[in-house]
Image 1 (spheres, rainbow, N blue to C red):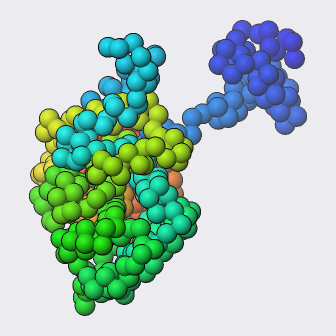
Image 2: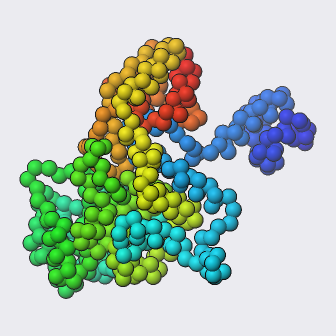
Length: 435
């Protein structure tokens, strides 16, 4: 063992992985039957490379889902990436005010920007939208009733279900109306002395169509003011600008929700807002102050990296630079451009012996937004004479970076709308290696 560890070939593995880890893998290589020194060291180096490989890595999204939750939702804008890198590189003014030389407040890095962007009296950042909702319910309605329409008792994913979030907060659920029809009178009949809040939830990941009814926002606002209960609206998606041009007509913006009379509005930072994973609460200053002073606020506060990226994203929205965000840049790409890129990739695939054609496709924003609202795209559709579609998909997923497509009709589809043009060369190289 000393001879192996002292060899020239062991120097780099020792530098990368440390003496103990190298010894462990050498012992495993010996136990598996290797005897020659070079074979032992090669086997150990390969095992160590797999053992210490990063599992969280960049991926190429070829699914056509622009805000793919499993792939990290929104890529960050260039200003957000720059801000994150600068803060990550050393110490920061997270809770320090250089002007006074005294302790500062971390929320001040985003508070003023959020108030300005949304026209809100006050704002608070937390680590995701579920945390924003949990904090608001805990701070304002613990032990009391919260009125929710049966048509808005949504499940977003995992254990994020409105009834369970209410239970975790200590609030009690009072359902009103029916799944498809809830009127303002249903809300009115539910209100009483033990009701602390009316909670409405934007149906961002489902649609109920047909014989339906829901109160207008101004009706809910008037009723909340009349009965002196808080109206909390979970807007969810973080929409800032109308998105009709991308096939999302009528998507309510955060500012519109506030203008409609909601006391508090919560939403995600990494969906249509296109920032880091975060949650924001905007609205009445007295209510935001109550949330900020609650013990749960510390448990869900964002870290310096989130705040840096979030502040840069807020500032970019205010400057009107949102069309340069990767998601909106992808959504706006002309079909002719996607067609040209697909044709070039199809030629590269053909040189590797893969049957490829450019076909019409449908892209979506996804990520818990805009159900059933698609917009046209183009996809590279692949088939292989020796590999089935699932095996072909697995081969591309095994690349560095992994290329994630979708299997439909027995073929592999790589949707060009969610692929950055700078990634085309990597896809061409991957297809060429599949000979």
